[in-house]
Length: 151
Image 1 (cartoon, rainbow, N blue to C red):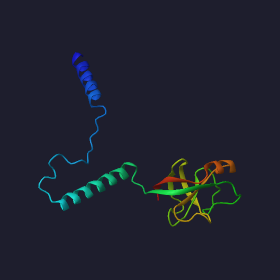
Image 2: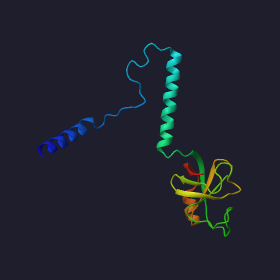
Image 3: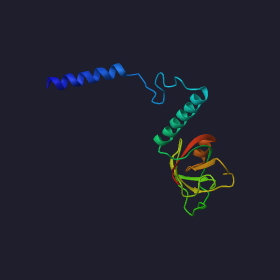
Image 4: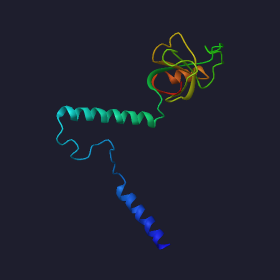
């Protein structure tokens, strides 16, 4: 039992000492570039940054991430372009950018499905459905991150 208490205390002490110390796994060890030409070092730096970006993408789920201009719309009395009635979680997209039926996540809105299109929804524009006109005015026009979950 004393050994177990000692081990736990040692681990807690180690955690306190190491708290705040961050190690960049992409940072080369000292001397890694010794003897390399400037061109070789630049190539390695480019590959290191590419690895970092790929790892960031994978850690977020690996889906495509877009920055889009988001507006909001509310009940019009019409079905969506895919034939459903609009509800929370319905968004209108340009099908050339995000095809109908695609499951996405919209910053500040949450999970949604691209079920509608719109006359002003072209390119990197998304229109989120909200239940009231007041909520649409409150949403306004904003830049949001959109992550494709399932194409």
